[in-house]
Image 1 (cartoon, rainbow, N blue to C red):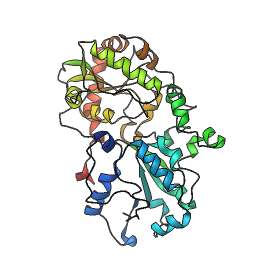
Image 2: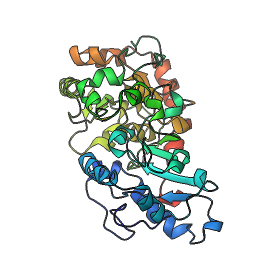
Image 3: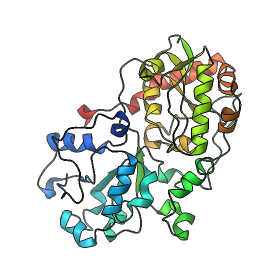
Image 4: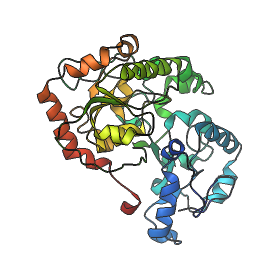
Length: 357
């Protein structure tokens, strides 16, 4: 684990962690750095299997990430090489960057995204927490080339609009600093990218087959693009009007996930949500709305996602108050049982902690 200078870092082992749970969810690196340094790090590069580059590990709001990335963009190749003395063509493919969300890539050019200030950075592995796995699609942000996801069962309509279209001007504004070539080929923007689930708190409970009190649970505040806000507000109103829905926006989200059959997970600032992870760990079937959500975390969820989630139409969910509840009630009990059995068998793939490092 590199000990980076303050120009590249904003946290050191022993610093207090932030209290904000949302910000904490946004960054796995803060926990990872301290765990690795305590348990399995070495000061000898000859003995190292991997070289973690902990750039800006402190958990923080996305706007703070933008400001810090703007400052990093001013650094030159000499600054980076001085901070990374063990980076060379022999070791480069064992070096790793970890970053919270791939949506921030355009503002973090130079090290995370192209154009790269150090040529070797093109071969450094990148782990995006909560982002879309680049290798799983021809387009990193789902502009084109995204196949329509298959429904998890008969009786649901599949969302046709991609997240790029859904987010509209909000999503386009995040790529406004890119050149026309980069916008045309976003899959080349972040080389050697894989995605990992959010570091999300899980409060126990076993994903079993016992009957649950609520049909669905909802716990999301309205933010993101106008479309995202409208969808979330519509779901909030639908939940409040239904006796079958548990409203988890008041601090009871984890308990309601354990007591609901379905957990409704709309996209917001990005397609991914930490709540999808905690839903699966609680045995609650995630209900998704964007095709990009069907490409999240393929190393953890890819082989069994279709058998453990429901995909609904985001436009109908926004426009029709009863749509979500009616669609979920129409799912045959046998299909529900099959999805819950899959989650019970496979959700452990998402469970890891500092003890696992």
